[in-house]
Every structure is written in structure tokens, then in C-alpha cells.
Length: 238
Ligand SMILES: Cc1cc2nc3c(=O)[nH]c(=O)nc-3n(C[C@H](O)[C@H](O)[C@H](O)COP(=O)(O)O)c2cc1C
Image (cartoon, rainbow, N blue to C red; front, side, top):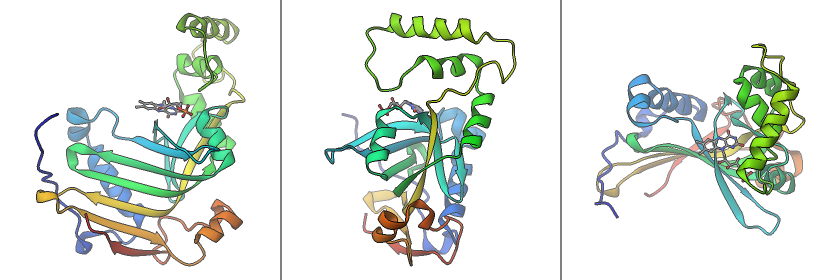
């Protein structure tokens, strides 16, 4: 194990906190993905750790890339047949975190997964490189595969079916192309500081966004991240 590191981040004080979780989030993302930080330290500054719960109640977690962000929450692309998609169908309660260790900062989300609209998914598919679009057809994400050779054979099969003519329309959107966003009821901004006296500032959704509303009314009941009237702020011990 490595030596202890003292977390010498800037911290996060209530006086500097943005009025909404969305503004605080976009501020931190902007700082983390600015050219200098990103190039030097963090090639994937938008890697989201995304957690679900399976049908036995056991948690599951994996990395995805944040491809969408608006006041509804962070979103990503995935396969509709994947383990994560099946787990969401069984239980939409999810958690996610987005962090930049070099800045001693992490954002944590707890809430409910909501499907991304088909048009946004299709628009995004068309922007992908040809090989990635073919791979989306070739891979049945999370299913067993006999060997890497078997996967490559599937790739070759679809590559022959949908050849590369340099157009976004060369490859149709596969039926398994899916996406989800996290509709958060709680967003925690964690900022590492010296002597383990870290800052933890939490935005909690107020009003109807209770557990009952989530379970009864679906993700649409959850407030937008940029609504200043919808969130209360508190501080947790580190
Ligand atoms: C940096 C990074 C980015 C990734 N981005 C995605 C992504 O955007 N979507 C995705 O489905 N899987 C992505 N993956 C792969 C997932 O971590 C995971 O292996 C896959 O989604 C299957 O997860 P599941 O079986 O739990 O559904 C990424 C992995 C890494 C390391």
C-alpha cells in the first residue's frame, strides 16, 4: 500500500456553494475537464460509477461514461439487455458517483433511473465512429461469449452487413441501444481537506420527492437539479 496522502483540496464552504445542485455540478465538471487538469491527470474526467440492485437485493456497480447532462440528471448509453438494464427494470433505485481524485472531489447521487428518449439515443448513435456502431450490433452486453474470436466473428459479420461509406446512416440503430439518466433525490458534494476534515455538502430534494413519490409516481415526480426551491442543503461530518 502507498503512503498516506493528505487531501489538500480547496474544500467547499456554504458561502461559495452554488444555489442549485446543477450549478454546483457543472461548475466542478468545468474545472475538472478543463484542458490542463484533464490532459495531465484524468483522461476520462466524465467516468461515472453507476450502481444498481439485483433481484436478490445485492448491489452491483460498474463504470459508464456520462454522455448526457441536463437538469434532469447525468445520463449514459448502454445495452438494453445488459445486467444493469435488467436490474433497473426490476428496481429503478440507483446510485452513482463522479469523481476527480486529483482535485480531491467527488459528487454522489442517489435516486431513480429514467430511460433516455429514443431520439436523443439515435442522434448520439449517428455521431459514433463506424467501428463503435458495428460493435453495438456485435456485442450482447453482459451475456457469456465463448471466446474473443467469437466476438470478433460477430463484428466481422455486421461489418460486412453495414459497410463503412463514411455516413452516419451506414449503420442502423440497434434495437438494444439504450440509455438511462439518474434522477437524483440526493446529491452530495464531497471535497477532501487536510487532516481528514473533509467537507460534505448535501442537497436533498424537498416536498413530494419522498420515497413514496419515487415508488408511486415515477422519476417524473423528482425535481429538476436547477430548481432552487426544490432542494435543502445540509452538511455531514466527514
Ligand atoms: C472508462 C469506462 C467507460 C465505460 N463506459 C461505458 C458506457 O458508457 N456504457 C456501458 O454500457 N458500459 C461502459 N463501460 C463498461 C462497463 O463498465 C461494464 O463493463 C458494462 O457496461 C457491463 O456492465 P453490466 O454487466 O453490469 O451491465 C465502461 C467501462 C470503463 C472502464
